[in-house]
Length: 269
Image 1: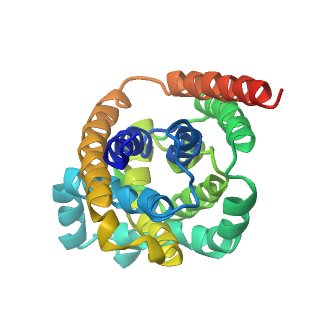
Image 2: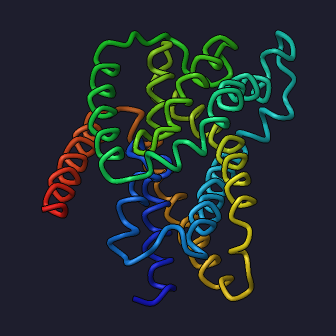
């Protein structure tokens, strides 16, 4: 298979899964062997994190007006109510807990069986949290407290386990602290911008040897496809979560995890 076609397929997978609670990393780990890709061979280690920036750019542009308004508006109750302060507070747990464990997770858990188990367990937790959480009457990101922001950031640390899903962890964290689904999703997307950019930059620098001119076309194809697909997915998901539950994503996670376990068991016979 041509590398350009592989780039298109992986760009589609990244765009579809990055902001849905189904784990983009998990899907990539499962998809690469099927496409005949060695994840340790250039340009693929860098490629995966480079195209992630395309998905992040889609979020920035989709929410650009809202982000600009919140950036320029002075909070009535002081700087502690500013969106950027809340995002900074939410990022602290990932910086303190997530970054030191990143290499360990990449080395030991980026494999089909751990990913499948994380998909299944995460799906079960999604159902439990969505059924039992208590919503507040808040309907705006501006109303999120610093405490809620910190707890959502703490929940995000669970996403260092491949197959868990950063979006799942932060949206479920938001629901657990009383946020409505749409508000939890919007804050999750905002938090993705600095978090994924920071994590992606660390990985890109780590695998910077793959950033050569010969791989430029493959990189740009994946970036463009990821951007376009992610934009459509974010728009659709924000409409969906206004009125509909998240359990279908939980069911998908569990079914996919079981399929992967069965496939892996057959592969070792």
